Amino acid sequence: MSEPVSLEKDDPGQGAHPRAHRFWSTRRLPAALVAAVVLAAAGALLYDIAAVRAGRPALRWRRRLAHELATRPLGDFWLTAGAVVAVLLGLWLIVLAVTPGLRGVLPMRRGAPDVRAGLDRRAAALVLRDRAMEVSGVQSVRVDVGRRAVKARAQSHFRDLDEVRTDVDSVLAEGLRELGLAREPSLSVHVRRPAKR
Image 1 (tube, helix red, strand yellow):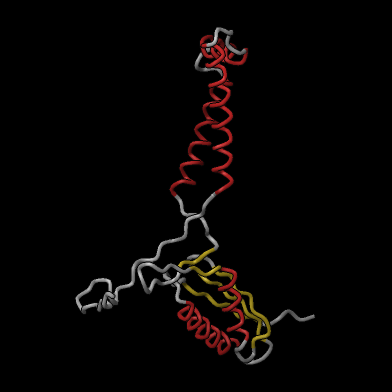
Image 2 (image 1 turned 90 degrees about the vertical axis):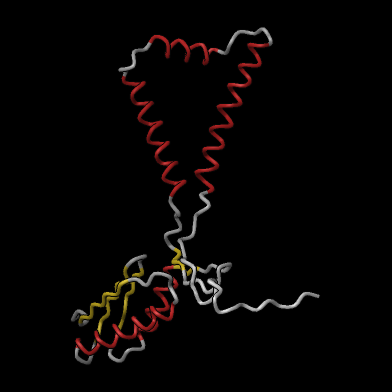
């Protein structure tokens, strides 16, 4: 039976919080579309090549494509349009490959290197809204949580607006700290009176 290993004080992993990165999206739909297109094109081409090797003539689409590519000038509209579409699709796939996605999930601070946690932006907005509703004088609150900023718009039906704004600001700032986000967003609070009916 092995003994538990104790961490020494000079261990760099102890007390240091690893940097939390955004979560990556699996992007199943673009991957499935690209795989289906590549599979269909490769299957048709392999079938035609096998048919030619077996002594049959090449399929009409391949003969026509070879003829069109051999006879059309490079400045032709359809060739240019096809090239532009291919470039745009390639750029889209590159962007999907190098960007994380999952913008709706905010990464939380990492207490251990092997543990990652994220918080849904709508859930964070709901928690902060409930905290702001506890402030005296607040009638309603709308909280929008972005990746870099939190915007709160409150309506106060009594008390001085500056006092309510100060209280809401402090309550939401404390709430943001307690959420444990890896990158704490900036906070802006606007308080006004409800519209008279």
